[in-house]
Length: 257
Image (cartoon, rainbow, N blue to C red; front, side, top):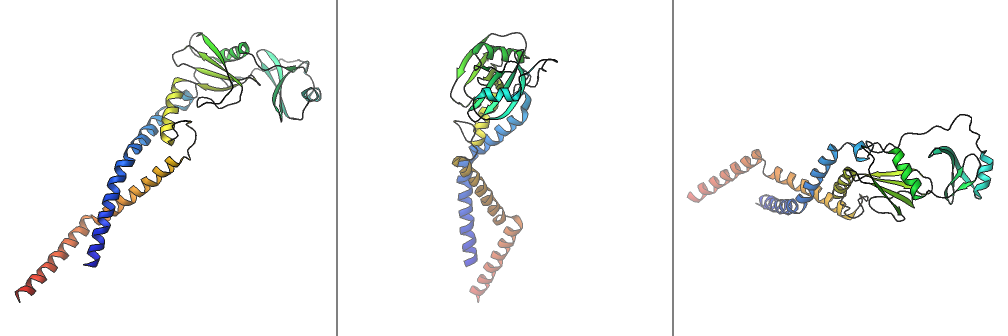
């Protein structure tokens, strides 16, 4: 009788726990499965906007170009330089100097330091990398604070193209490099990513207390279901019913005596 009473209490506790957790966590489980399925269907190169903006093309420095020496460039920087890169920017060779105070650009032929990229230069960089159809109109806006759409190098220029995908190209002001591309597909992916990791504001923190709580709740939901399955297993239930009938029969025979 004691064993039967403990089993009944265990069954009742597991049943109630499983039921309420299923109600509470069921909605988030649906969002997890739905968002995961949708993100799996979206090609990652389309999410990154690679079909609209090509960031892989590197223009070679013309042969025979006389470049300033690294020593001259580092001297012009006025602060210790950790790395130096020669590259082309809008048809001219530049030197990219990385220092403890940030990144500076210099004319690779004269060694003169260059000012940060302007709005017109940022638009020219974005258009040079454009691979979409036509030549859509563009609006250029300076970005100085991080936002869910962009957390790259700041300050930056946002070049907003008036195309079907509402493409936004971000160009770092210090380097003139494209640091991010955002499209309608990316925004859809990012929205479901925020639902998936339960960071509804910034869409980047997958260590939120909400995610941890619901993950633990899902584990408890599984444990409760396993206990119910063990208690309600057909073979076990038949054996328990047979034992109850035998005991009931023995009591009846004793009553007759």
